[in-house]
Length: 390
Image (tube, rainbow, N blue to C red):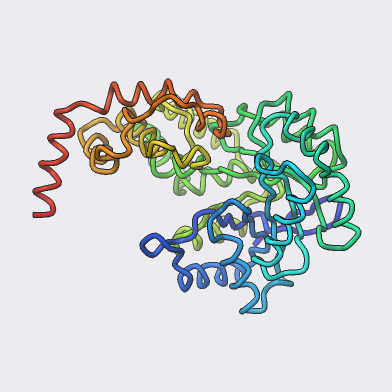
C-alpha cells in the first residue's frame, strides 16, 4: 500500500480509501459477517482511511462495531459527515454528532466534514446556525481532529467555500470522464495550492466506468498494449495527480478489494505515459457520446414520494443507449414494473433539490418514459418473466 501525506497535519493516508456507503447486503440488511471480513482484509493490507456518513443507513453503526470488536480503531482514520441540509440549529449539530460518536463507538472523529455542499450559501447558512462555534468547541475537546467538506457544486462555488475557512481537507468528485465537471482539476489544484488535502470520490463514476462502458470504449482498453482492467485504469488516472491524497472506493466485492489493493501498491503520481493518457481520452469520448443522463447512482434523490426508482430509470435508459438490444429494456420493465416506472413522476421537484449532479430529473424522466414505457415492452417483459420463473 502506498501513502500520501496531508500537509496540514502530517497524516499519512493510504491512497486507497474505503467508502462505506455500499456494504454487501443479505436481502435488505447489511451482511455483517461478510462486511467484517472485507474491512479486516482491507486494514490488514494497509488501508487506513474509512469514509462513512450520518445518512448512510446502518453504515456508521456497522463500521463502529467492526473496528471496536477487532481492536482496529487506533489503526485507522474514520471520516464521517454531518448532513448540511437537515441542520438548522446548534442543538441539532450537537445531537447528530453525539449520535455519530455512539454509532461509531469512538471518542473522536479523525476527519469530520459537512456533507454535500452544493452552493457557498449552504456553508453560509451553517455559519448562521453556529457551525464555527461547534467546530471550535469540539476541536478543543479533542473530539474532532480535522474539519472539511464534501462538494457537489460548480467551480465558482467551490473556490468561494475553500477561501472562507482554514480547512484541513475536502472531498470532490473526480475521474477521467469528469475532469472538468464540478470542482474538477482546476478546483483540485486550487485546494492543493492552499495545502488542503483532497479526497477523491466517484473514481469509477458509480461503477459506470467499469460496468457501463460502451463496447467500443471497452475494446479500446482491451486492445491497448498494457493489460489492465477498466477499473484499474480509472483508479490510476486519479492517482496520477499528486494533489489527490486518497481515492475512495465503495468496495463490497472480495475480488474488487483484492484488485484495488494490488493497484494501490505501485500507483505513483505522474507515472502515466502520454500514450496511456491518450488511450483514456479516447475511452472518455466513446463514453460521453453514448451516455444520456449524467447520473452516478448515488441515490441522494431517493426516496421519491410517488415511488419512482430514479437511479434505475436512468441506469436502464443509459444502458439502452450504450448497449442497444432488448436486455436493458426488459431489465427496466422487470425492475420498475408499474410501481416505480418513470411515468409515475408527478413533477413535484423534490428530487431535483437533492441531486448533487444538478440533473434536470423531471425532464429526463419524461425522456425515459418516452423511450422505455411502451405497452408492448411491458407485455414482452411479462412474457419473459413467465418463461424464466414458470
